[in-house]
Amino acid sequence: MDTAIETSIMEHLHHLDEQRKAEVLDFVEYLAAKTSAASPAANWPEIDPSRDLAKYIGTATFPEDGVAYQRRIRDTEWP
Image (cartoon, rainbow, N blue to C red; front, side, top):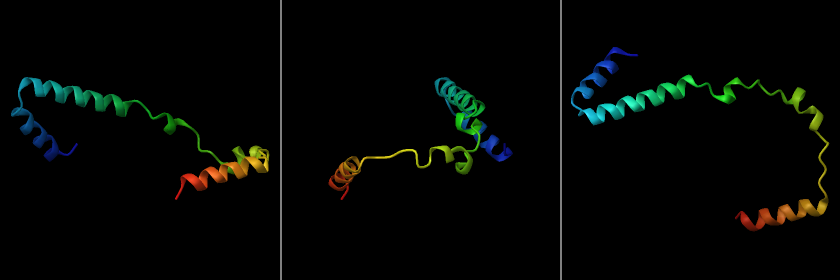
């Protein structure tokens, strides 16, 4: 961390009462736990559509009346 930022944080902490210092500590611990917990999406492999989705392309068929129904809903809900 930048020394100027650390100095500024420390100066501001000296002016706080004990309750506020405890709140700051809780928040810092929350941030540390949040950053240490890896994002589930970050661990997922990259999706390659040509490889992973190719088996699904063209397999879903929708009846024409179902498509027309969805279009009517879209047209009435969207300006």
